[in-house]
Each structure stands twice: as structure tokens, then as C-alpha cells.
Length: 474
Length: 117
Image (cartoon, rainbow over all chains, first blue to last red; front, side, top):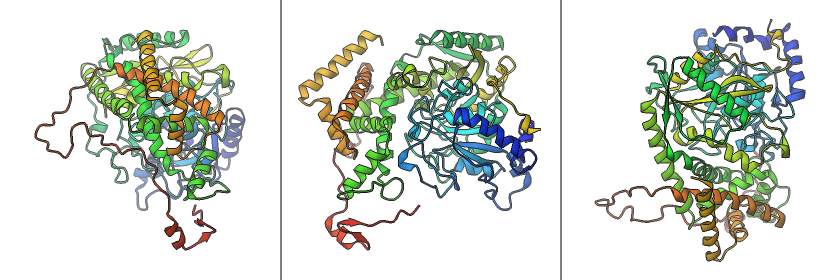
């Protein structure tokens, strides 16, 4: 077990320490609303470890609490996806990524808030609650894994799971000043994730230390017979070939506000000071990544969310004229505006007569971008990017509108389109708000991300929000 | 791609739309029907604006250079050149009257299905 996890072990069953922990969590929860469900008195996992597993195999996270984004299945908890359509849905099974952590002794202490069906970059699209940034509650957590990021930043859990379809782990991690890993596509089983855009998304990790991120990732990854897209265990998931030596910077990146730009430039200097050679990369096809990403994401969303009919599970309209009417009313009442927009857009781009222009074009672009990035990542060990064009923005109309938020995904969605691993690394505070940089590596080279993040860690201690404390651990 | 290219593509999209004779709101109504969503008049207008904005943005993909075509020689007719391999638009019909009649539990003309979870 990592030294920094030891104080967390057994916390929930410790009669002396648990009341202090619950009081601390309740105090934060009243201000940031990170959780949709929080149940330290009945965590999920105590009985989930495989029978006969040795204590060593179970011990990495024995008795350590963690939080799970509420679009990942955990038996014993509801899985709402932040949507009215699943508000009371109690899931009868557990996602593989969670089960693997439970198998090593970790305990799910709660489910965290998210933008409805993970569609958004602020967490304000949740139909079931509002989450706020621990550094400034008038600002958003980022999203869609905003609740997970806020809970980790506030020190309520040592780590949390999120999902990342276009930046949904990395952007809230950066807004809240913690590490956020989006693994390679296929590295971690997607079994048990509520599908939004199946070819882009995956489970990720948020934590206040890169060591914890790596330990959680290594515990979750590997082939899963329940997910045919999971990678075979023989792949180089655990490969290491020494520290990275070069990092690529993409030519012509723009659109950052002053604080984000300054933080990005400062982080590049830190990378250079740590001994990495900076190499400028010309990647012209990245101009097309965002429209291709949203075309594919919405097309897949329209298909994946067709399963919510109100018939077998989830919200069902009280009255209907016939089965088709029941489905229509259930969906109309159950989905929020952003989800409806993406379903409509996805249905539109898949309509006959429009498929070639949008969906098939986007797939061509996706292939070309993958090839371009694969070539670039043969020349350099890593690529450094900003995470988001701004720092955490205010809630509501004074912040960014939904279209602006989509346009701002341009730095993060590249890794999803290409299936590459990427890590958001916290780089301190600017005007009291967290800043961060994003590192991207070749597929299944997460080891390079961790090595580079470790080299930056002494320069950028993870910040602490006001009233942060871990006294309850003593 | 600069802003001038973007607006040029958007103009082309608007022209293509007006040539087809269908307004975006009409096209959106078809999409809503396919997606089993009811839209009020107000919602239809609001979504048409948002969808239109996104489609104009998607039109920037038209600037992407055409890729080399996959050679079809020797591949027979299994994948006819230019064939649209995605299904045409159609709503999958729900249960027919005969199936509803045969259901174990019914309430009037509806099949009664317990909420199992």
C-alpha cells in the first residue's frame, strides 16, 4: 500500500476517526455539492473481494474509501447519470473497473455528480444537483466528472473515478487542481459505464498525487471478457523504457485567455528546466478534430441513448396512448435540454442523405488524425497541451454558454479521437484558481505520462483549497 | 482554418439547405420523430438555432482534403462501390396489435410490464 493511502485505510470502520471524517465531508458537501449519494456508514465493496484472494492481492487499497462518478455502475447504489430518466434506477451489478479496486480492498463511499449523461464541461447540466468549485463556490467544477474532481480536491476522498469522452476527467481535474488521467482506449474495461459515445469514452482516475493515479490505473487496467474492446493483458501497459526525453508543442495553438496562456508557458519552461527537449510540431489536421469529435460523439449518443424508453427501467411517463407514445413521453420528460440537443444532432448527422457529409467524413478525419499523431509521437515521447482555454469559469450566464464550452474542448478531445492516454497535471494557482497542463503519449504509454508528471511534482506542489484539512486521518 | 473559411463553408451549407427546400426546423422535426422526442414550438425554434450553429461548425469538415479511395478491384460485389452501408431512415415499429393481444398482462390496449428494478 502506498504510504499516502495508509492513513485512509480502515477510516470508515474506525469509531474514533469516522465522526470527524463525516463532519468534515458534510461541511464540504454543504458548500460544493460533490456527491449525489454519500454513504460512509454502508460503503460498497466490503463483501466484493473475490473469495480466496490473498491479503497481499487485496491489500493495495484495503479499507481505503473512494468515490465513483454516477455514470459508473456500483451495486448497492443508484446510477442516475445525473438524469431524471434514471433518477431512481438501482443498478444490479458493478463495473469491472470498480470491482477490480474493490477486489483489492477499496470501498465505494459515494457517487459523484456529473453533467447529465456526461454531456458538458461544467457539471451545471446535472438534473439532480449543482456542484461548485472548492476554490471558489461561485465557479464551476468543470465537467463532466465535476463531482469527482471537487471531492478529491477538498480531501473528502483520496481518489475518485470519472469518465472521459472529450476531456471530462482532465478538465475538471485542472479546474480543481488535481491530477486527472484519461487512459488509452481499451486499457480499462468499459463494462458498467453508461454508454454515451462508446468509441471515445473510458474510465479515468482523479487524485491529489501521481502515485495514487498510477496505482489505481494499474489496478483497473487489463483485458475483460465483458468488454471486447478491452486490451489484451499482454500489451505493453506496464512497459517502461526510462524517462521521456522530448516533448512536442503544437504549432499555432491559440485561443487561451491571459491566465491560461501564462500558466501554459510557465509549465513549458518547467518541462524544459526538468531536462526535456522541446520540439515544435506542425499538425495541420488538428484544425478538424473538434467538428469530427462532435459529429462522432453525437451520432453515437443518439444510438446509445435510444435504450432509454421508460419500458424496462428508468422513468416511465404516467400516461400514454400507445407504446410509441409511452416511449416518446418518457424520453421527452426524462432528458434535459443538452441531452436532447445531442440526440437530435446525432440523429441528424446519421440521416440518409447527410451521412456521407457528416458522419463518414468525420470518420475519415479521425483516421487521418490518428495517423498524424502516431507519426508525431514517433518523433517525440510526449505532447504538451493546455487543458482548457480558461481557468474555472462562473456558474450560469456569466460564464460560458454551451456552444462556447463545446468549442473549448479543442485541447482535450484530440486524445479521445485518437484513443491516446493523457494526463492533466496541476501547476499551481493563478489569482486563487488552479491551473494545469495536459500531457499526451502514444497509445499504452501511460508510463511516460507518470514519469513526466513526477519530474514536475517538486516544482508544482498540489494546491489546497481554503479550509482544506486532513486532521481527521490522525 | 481561418474565420473567413469557416463563414464561407457556413454560407455553402445555408445555400444547400435552401436548395433542398426544407427548413432546418422541418428537418429537425423529422430527426425528433426518429429519436422519439416531442418538441414544443418554442423548443423546436431553440433547438433549430443550436443545431444550426453546430451544423455550420461541422461544415468546416468540408475543407478536409479528400482521402485516397480504397481500391475496389478484385473485391467483387460484396461491397458495391459507392454503396451507402448505413441503413436508411426509418422508425422501427413497436409491437403490432397481434402481439399486444397475445401479451400475458394487458391494460386496455397496452402491454403491462412490471418495473423489474
